[in-house]
Length: 97
Ligand code: SF4
Image (cartoon, rainbow, N blue to C red; front, side, top):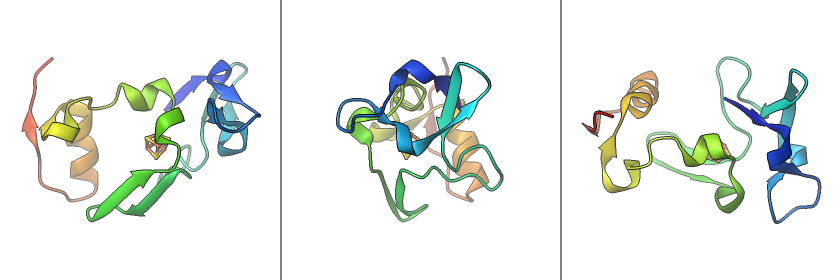
């Protein structure tokens, strides 16, 4: 998913690191690795379905902050279900918007 380039900062430690994004059009960027298929964000660590984490969790872009906000407490949503389905993972309880 793309997000505004103004979420990016060349100085590490405060916003999405510039080295981890690539341009999408004039004012948008996306995380490296997410534009192609198969897609895997450069900041994703670990093995999907086993244990994963975000290397820039504290500074992840808004699109990531907004994704499946209740997944950490075991409640999914439509986007979460789609992602889990793509990776052959069982569904979480669904929360309708
Ligand atoms: S949460 Fe982190 S690992 Fe996941 S897509 Fe966003 S930046 Fe990449």
